[in-house]
Amino acid sequence: MFKEFKAFVMRGNVVDLAVGVIIGAAFGAVVTSLVKDIIMPPFGLLLGGVDFTNLFISLNGQSYPSLAVAKTAGAPVIAYGQFINTMINFLVIAFVIFQIVKQVNRFKAPAPAAAAPATKDCPYCAIAIPIKAVRCPQCTSDLKP
Image (tube, rainbow, N blue to C red):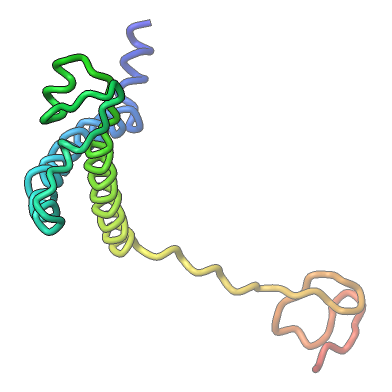
């Protein structure tokens, strides 16, 4: 059983997947920081100093100065500002991944072109004959155009 498990884990697909998940998690943390620390502050400033992380609706009717205070008080909230941050985070990640895949595909070798057919069908007896044939060897029909 251990031998089978080792063979399963050491297959290329499993190792590649594990590496992809680890790199993806690290990449997600970098993009989250990019959105939170670099993109959102100027974006909020352009919209009049809005801090998206503190945009929320308190469902119990009370007013709270920040989302952290509301959560500490145990108030039910709809944190739509954090949802906006998450959506922007997703869009940045999707755009970066799109650009990476686009560049990787650019460097891939193009698929080989399909070879030209070497035979054609005789219009009279429907047998396969060489493309350059001018007379069918089966029915002896003239194949000149």
